Image: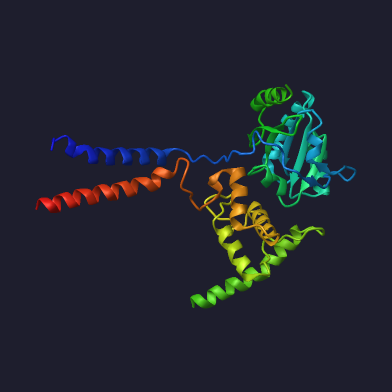
Length: 176
Length: 138
């Protein structure tokens, strides 16, 4: 046997150890992207988040106008940090529907009074049922929904100032 | 001693759990997250499924192990759907369609994972071949 061929298994082993070692030093990806991007919103009907509000259904997203669907909660701290940027999205003309996870109308009213109200409609998702159905794994997350009710884009985590242009761009693309 | 400790833990858990969840419940829908299903066989299947689904917010824990509120809601989803007649594998597939196979602790062969199953088999065959050759020579 060729004397170099003798080292091939050792080289393969070293390669494997090197690869495993490298992967161990890489930070763990903790974002879980939704597989529902590109698919229609599932059918749902949720109770209103405002005392004088109406229930929110998936049919509200199929009137031809693209919207943002913001998954949030009054108990969620990053949602407070996100509030001013939702406000600037609203000022830029983005209609935002909020789905508040495990929330109550009283808490929502108090939160909006303190941090501003960017929402055209708010619903309460008591058991995360819609959140699970659209593949969202935390709060806050924001989805771009086109006028036919198809999910076009997912933003994971709170929206920062630097994220606003991309979200507006995705919303514009969804309207084309 | 251990037995007594466990009993104490169990007693505390039994007392504390209903208190915690009672506050979170609404009048219209009772959470089935921590209510066993009436049919013991179905409950066993539900339990097995919950132990093999990843908690999304805590990760590296199953939804059966986690007290994160999202895990509670996922247990509710599993038990209520099973009670409505869905099979555990239907529920697992429903979740994989939304979150990818990351959500399941039950690995599936296929897609990009097939080499994981194929390579060991190939290596064993190779080793057997070498062994047979050497034994014949000697």
